[in-house]
Each structure stands twice: as C-alpha cells, then as structure tokens.
Length: 498
Image (tube, rainbow, N blue to C red; front, top):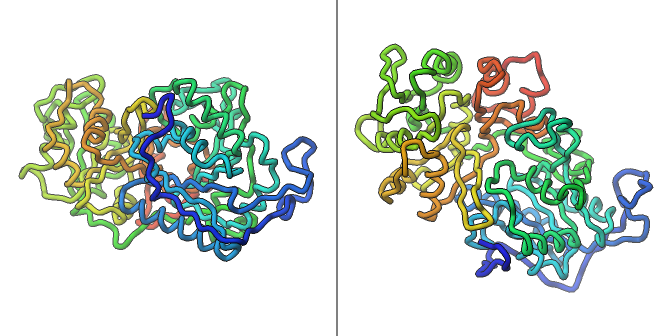
C-alpha cells in the first residue's frame, strides 16, 4: 500500500482522453443564483473553465455488475462531452487505477491522482456509479468557484445526534459538522488535492478503521480547522431524475432499487441467523414478527437447541464477541447436504432487520456463478496494506461460489471468538476476491444515519435493537413489496409501510 511513496504499477484502462482542436469555455455566473456572496465563494472576475480541466473519478467496483454500471456512466459523460466539444474530459474508473485494496478509501490514492493529473487540471469530481450528471450544468456550477483556491464542494449531510458510526464525533453538537453525500457527486479543487496529497505522503493516515468514508474524508480535509469545511452546493442533488425539484440540479439519482431482471426466487436464498440462548426470548420473536415469513429456507444457529423456535446447536460454544467459529460452521453446513442447495447464503445477526423481498430484487443484478461477497463494506488498515470486509450486523451475502473458494482455501478462524467479518475479509483479500459494497445495507439503526442520506435510499437492512422499537422500525423502513420507492419511510412519518 501507499505510505510515503506514489502508487506504482497503476493501470491506464480506467481513463479515457480524446484529443482534438476544439474546446469549450463556460463563463462564471452563467447560471445559478443571481446574487454573489460577499466572501470569495463566487468569483466575480471573468473566470473561465475548460472542459478538459475536470478529471472525473467514478467510484467503481470490480464486480461485473458494477463494471457495467461504471462503463455506462463513463459513456454517458463522454457522449455529453462530445455534444459540446470534441475534446473530452478525463474519466477514471477507480477500480482500474491499481491493484491496491485501499484505493476505494480515496485518501491513499490522492498522491497518485495529484502527481498524474494535477498539472493540467483544475478539479477532481468524484461520483458514484448511479450518479447522473448534467455536464453543462455542472460546468456552470464549478465555474462559480475560483479554481486557484482550495475548495471542497458537495451536497451537505449532518448528524442529528452523535452516532457510533462516526465515533460519537462532535457529541455536544453533531449537526455542526458537514460531510458530503457521495451519491450527489463531490469535488476538490487542484490546490486542495495537491496539499492533501503532500499530507498523505508525509504523515501516515491515523485511523485503523474505515467505517463511513464520506465522514472520514471530510474530517481529514477539515483537519481540526486547518483545512476547509465542506461548501454546500445546492445544484449537487440526490433528487430523482423525474422530480420537478431536479430542474436546477447538476446531478440526480434514479428513483428505484436497482433491478436487472426478474427478482431472485426465494428458493435461491438460504438464510442463517446467528443467535444464542440468552436472546431466544428477546430477539428471535422480533424476527418472527417481521421478516422471517419472507424467507423460504431459514435456520437459527445457537449454542442451545430449542425445539420451540427451532434452533440448531452447531457444537460451537457461544462467545461474547467475534463468533468466527459459529460463522465458519455455518459456511460448512451451507455446502453440506443438510440444507437445501441454494445459490445464495445470507448470514445475519439475531438483531438484524432486513427486507428479503428487496434483497431478492438487488440480487437480480449479481451472477451467483461469480464469487460474490456483498454487504456494507468497512476497511481495516487500508493505508498500510490492510483489507476490506463486509460488516456482519447489516447482513453478509455470499454466492455459493464464494463459499466454495473460501473453504477450499483452508482459511480458518484463529479462535472461536475472533471477529468473523474481519477474518473473512482477510481470507478474501488473500484470495484476491473482491468485497462488493452496497450502501443499502446498514450496520447501525436508522437514527445513526443522516436523514438526507436515507431519504434517497430503498434500504435493505438495519442493525441493533438498542433504544428503539425494532418492529416499528421494520414496519417504517423495510416492510413493502418488491418495488419500493425511496424517501417514504423518512418523510411520511404516519405511514407504516414504504
């Protein structure tokens, strides 16, 4: 991994650059608000922006579905650019830039981006695979900012209450700190990228864990007040494409859960619930009241056999933390003749709230013949050669092929109480198998996420019963048919279904 040196061995397949003799310029103030602020937020002078001064970075992933999504986004950007000028911008696909696992966390990649593309550029614009861009509008927005100064632009999110996923930062006033919604796109001016790149080169990144990247990037840039805060840009939006509110937007989102054909059949998913004796009467009844009926094949695995549930004792003693021994026993059982032969394995905790119908829709986009490991991605030691892993509380989804490769590799727990999700991450990293991220899985409760972040999602899972009514949370956020729309669970408080 990158520490004090530039990335080496970077690939070039992820970038596209067309050269010609034409260019297009956009004058500052050609659209947007009529008034200019009295600080230096908007450039008063005749600032002009050339299309080629922008480097787009699509935060892509190596799974085949996500590659198709990213290729489509790149093609759309280039098509729009071609309609304006024959000199197209540079469009990079993040997953192709190198083989370094930590690149998705952005910060270790900054020295490479600065060194390779900083000299002839003014902006880096980062976007997700599903972010729709109106290129002309985006150029007009960027032209309002002085490209010679440090800018950190995005759609602003903030916490309503201090949250575990942000390490309870700003506990006295959580809403004071703003961080970007990556789905709306976010931008860094080249002077800021250059300074941040030097900082990454000179100072090792401090955090061992990468949990909520957008918050951690904003903290790194702010640097305790030494760097710029996020500047909220109203034209960077997460409104649906067809929304009347999207008319002023430079970026928009689709309005439904991704679907790539018919939803996966219930018969194709085996569900494994990890529990223990002390939670049989407290947590298991919640599952039975909420989502158990949507799973055709489901087993509860415990340290105590209870015929009334029923639970299965895998012969692994309960541990207060980790549960690695139990999870690997589940993987082995999944490949045995003791359970139905299914294409997908879903492993959840007994306090996971999940929508099986929505998972069926999402899995239509993934090929079970590939080694797919899907869920909410965290990272450990990514700047020092670490690894990614699917955090267990939000649910871990494995294709049969992934389970076969994991167990055939000889990967094992170093102890029964080792953290199962992290051990699996180490194993996958050693095998060179990708961890595929979906922001629709959540390790924490709805209260732990920014409201505007959840407003454009059709969530698949949440985790933890702490200080909530889990049945009410399920009914508000997760109970629905196969084709839910975003936002309803947040903005229609009196409604119990999405």
